[in-house]
Image 1 (cartoon, rainbow, N blue to C red):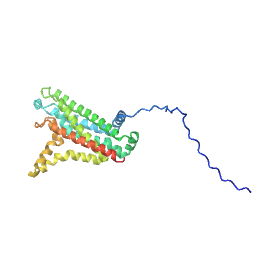
Image 2 (image 1 turned 90 degrees about the vertical axis):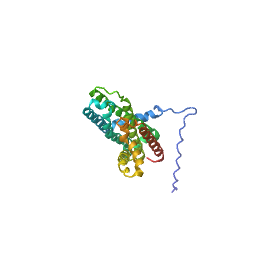
Image 3 (image 1 turned 45 degrees about the vertical axis):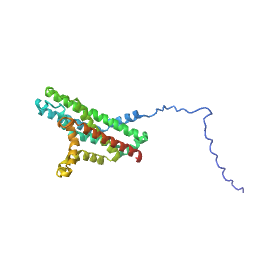
Image 4 (image 1 turned 120 degrees about the vertical axis):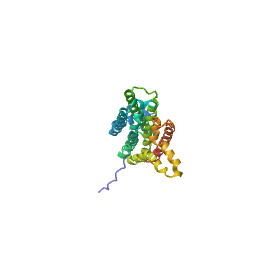
Length: 278
């Protein structure tokens, strides 16, 4: 009986090589990605989710609705030396919470559902994604805010005959810029915390605590200076200065402080984005 021979080892098939001097060209067109693609993606997201429609819808309802009600209840003499956009101020006090909520949800909702992994897979350059979110949100928030404040100003001017000589165009720009920066700050905080409830709570504390704390700080003479600064720079008083309800200043320093705080938060968000895992 013959002894069975062990099977011969199979040799690997030779690796295919392109002919010398030739290169492979994919039939699928390849387009280098850029910020424009990320902007288009974020615009598609923000306009297609229901949270955007709800928050911006409530924002318009508050600013325009309350503004119209206040405008109807006032008289021509009330606008002798103040702008016609003042009725919008009362709606913005509540409406700014809507922009804060939307700013947080723009980024934190993707972390909550896990879709941020898909986003970063499609766009591995994370800083580009966050930049696109910031730009799209700020533009949307500014345009909607300016529209709401401007509509209230036009309505009030029509109701009261346009007798006021005070220009109100600047209040539209500065008021819109202030609440839009507040929402952008919320977006940056949401990117750092990655948690919707936590980020919204932190932002509400940032808005409400400086408005409430001065009443307690004034009880102590040594803390009165801190209370004065909180009272001067909190969000409601900043908007009051912008809309000329407070004759002590025009809101420029308050707007500058908010811009600096927003820039610092954005820098922190970019730094943490590159250091942490998804």
